[in-house]
Length: 412
Image 1 (cartoon, rainbow, N blue to C red):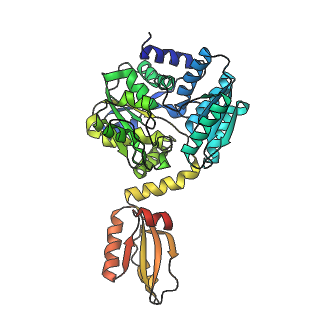
Image 2: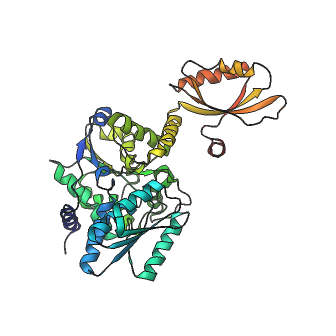
Image 3: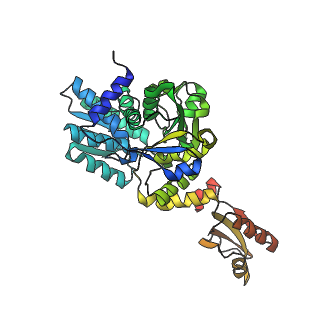
């Protein structure tokens, strides 16, 4: 029987008939910042701007080899898996039915339809992914189609391991550490299974979808009660059974979570400094460098930038979250006295670097005081300390709601 490594090598070789290997690039900016040799494995540069087409290719290749009359493949996905399956359906000349949630952004739907062309049909079903998945599986049962899992499939894991094959071919030696994102676990299970204990690993999850950490704590996959879909390419409620079996022996200290707001600062840094467009999940590995900075000093590190399918309509949200994380944008509810000159008095407290980004009266019928929602941007977080001291000295009552999730959800 062939080893996993041999099968991964065969999968990688077969892929070269469809798309070129992705580059492994040294990043001078990150290398200088962390005092290490930082290499980016640019999976954001595949034909569908993510690594997902690797697993889709290998799984479909094997199904068609075993059952050449298979004519329809089915998947459920809100993003990169859908695009990978669509691309490969057109390549193999088979039909694909792709179920996507009704809430899927039109940009992702359009990309999926572009890659698949006449070979695929997109069906928008369900407000939540669980409903979409159930509809896709039911459709498979009715039509006899072959369901393509986004991660919990041995052939998919084997296909994602082709990333490791390329890394090995592109380096003179092996890296000291590989940092990669985790969603359902297909990529991390494939790379770690290929390299084994030859290097260190850091597996990265968004804080709002830390299903690997939950599974490591419980000793088995568990379903998260709630997830934050901001990093939608990695925000998974439950890690795969097959993938976790390959990751269960991971040291919990090697599984890190990063806050979504901090992730936004990394996305902006890579865009503004390096001109690299990364989706939230695609930036996870780069963002985690700050969590392992002491461990990687002087080492050779590969970060897998797993995807670049970013809708620029989300850029204002990314900027907003990044500003709030680094403390240069805040929101206050200010209790403003209803007397002439009160607003002018407040405005004189603003410094030369402070700018009002939002101003809205919340109560217009109060006789003596009015509540105002005010958003302020500045250049340095310390400027807010100065402003708040002035407010207190002048007797103004205020509340900082920047990090109050409940109030921010309704007011901001």
